[in-house]
Image 1 (spheres, rainbow, N blue to C red):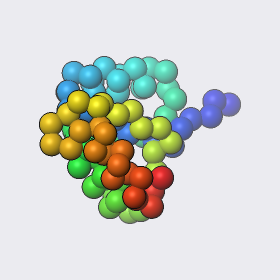
Image 2 (image 1 turned 120 degrees about the vertical axis):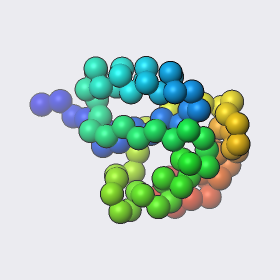
Image 3 (image 1 turned 180 degrees about the horizontal axis):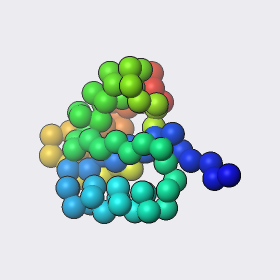
Image 4 (image 1 turned 180 degrees about the vertical axis):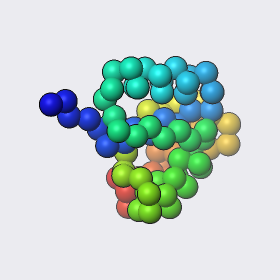
Length: 85
């Protein structure tokens, strides 16, 4: 029996990268759920609101560093303050 991760969160503003990573994760069949956020703020909103109502906390987060709005470094600083880590 293959053990899968509950959830993987992709944080990237590039749709092509998200498509490629989602396709790769589906192909290797390593997770039950893949979530995508287009910037750090959207990811924080997902982690702070949706997680307790519908989705499990992500086992792995793939984070793009260079994004408009809230970049990866700013996301990490805010993520350290959340209860979800």
